[in-house]
Image 1: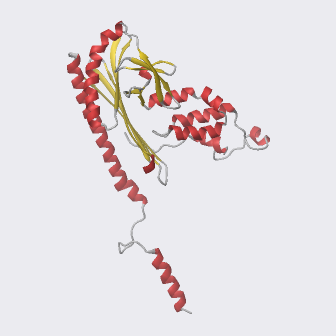
Image 2 (image 1 turned 120 degrees about the vertical axis):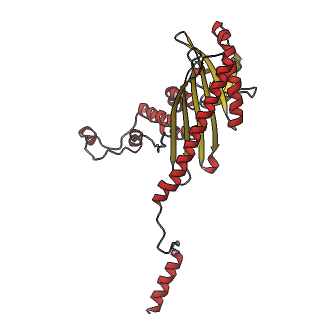
Image 3 (image 1 turned 30 degrees about the vertical axis):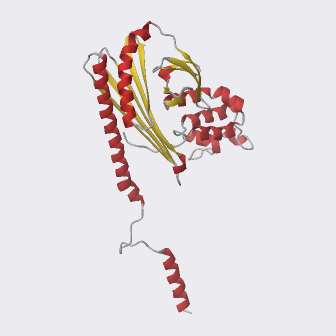
Length: 317
């Protein structure tokens, strides 16, 4: 997966600055209208939602503060942009710290209602505020027949993967769900780690998602890396890789161990590929943008050059 530079979509940019597409072809209807274009509340909310969905990791509140200035109507923004808040948090695997200090993830697989999520580790429900990023109102989840059937197997996966995450990721969090899709059991693993360092002008997010069929041994995984660097510039890096394999069908503890090994191997290979790409970017692409040194292989001292020019002018007088 090759890294790519991301920016706001041209459509959003055009709405913000009200500039025509090039080559410019006048629109008779627009040409007849006088004065600057005024965005409706619906247009403003559409722009705001697009910006919120593209907010870099760890910078949601900064982007939210900016879009409030665009909309100028907190009630409209709160009513119309709720879906963007939810989609962003679920896509980012946003960590949620429960009142007792336990950490889990906000994902679409744990959603049980509007603003309500399940923590599979403790089988509790909690309410999540998508603006403040806070969890509250924790209460026990109902234990049904499906839970009693799938929980022993799910627990095997969770214990081994939690141990792996604790060793490999300093701020990592993992959530393991047991689902029944079309009468077939499925284990879903969501893993997140991040490093937010705005004072050093960068934020980074690591996510991986794994789907396992205990009946067939089929495994599919998606690994994603998001990075934003904004010192004297604005660089967005998005990288993604899809992997798949088939495990030998066995007891849950054996399959959980095999899955953990596959996850470790896949993520290590993906991380190494990113390091290699960054090295090539630094050595080849960025170096090609720099000016080459003069023939004497020394940097040109511009201040000395000015002094030489001044001395030359004085000598001719």
